[in-house]
Image (cartoon, rainbow, N blue to C red; front, side, top):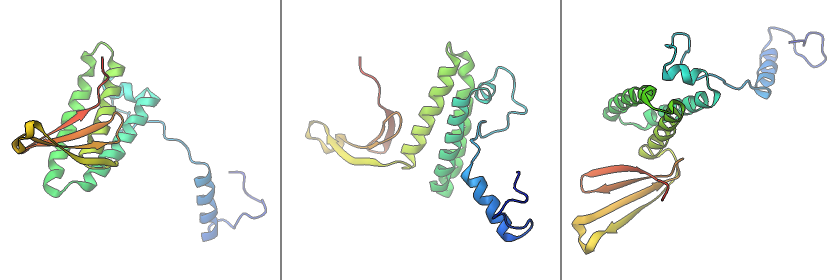
Length: 172
């Protein structure tokens, strides 16, 4: 570290030394470069290999890992197993991007949409609403929508016992 003999550096092995080193490390954090998973045993050509070799996809993977952890924290005990099963299904879907013409865009879109989905379903970002819409004045046709500030923007619409997560789509 090049600190020995410098003025103001506490003696090695003392609590003050540990606090001093902690402060220096915190002042110069090293950016995370890889994904949230180990790249040591990924299959070449797989979606995981693509994520391991792409800084932007690795950053999305880390963001998804943090979002998933936050969702797990909010999930009730019975909902936690469903969340875990849905995540396994999402991973299988992401891994199917090898079939896509633009594999990178497919993987990126999978991450972006999954992050937005978890943020909305588990209320991890601010929402607006609920807003109630009644079709043809019939209360049986009531739709209740809550809008979320995700990227891309989402809403959750409820009608009767059903609910749907919807993503803002470009017009045209």
